Length: 177
Image (cartoon, rainbow, N blue to C red):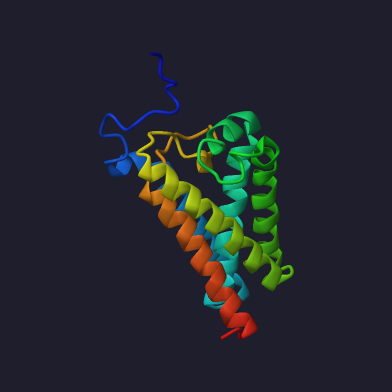
């Protein structure tokens, strides 16, 4: 029986060392630093930094996915709840992410941007949890096909972190509670 190498159970120590996640860590650190630089320039506070960080982060990750849409769609369809049912969604997702990133950078329709981000991140979180429970050893499509980072709890933390940041901004700016 031949196994598809992109879709298999974890059989090695891949994803156990920090170096496996360096591409992801470097992008997060660069987005955080760029957000900080913009916040300093505009004399903004924590909310501004979160907007800039999330905007830069989402735009960078969308760019990585757009480089090779079909390869991204192949990987994304392995675990995302909507993409498993619709390849069209897998192709559209990077542009949704880009739109969210640009909306964060422009401070455009903040409440709508926060809510859309929360929804997208919840859907992503559920898909990642499902893939982790199946112990799948696949590259995280979040990095497109350009960088190889294993799908792991780091990916889960990224989705949850972005969702939580969007929720904090939503609660803080709309006085929902």
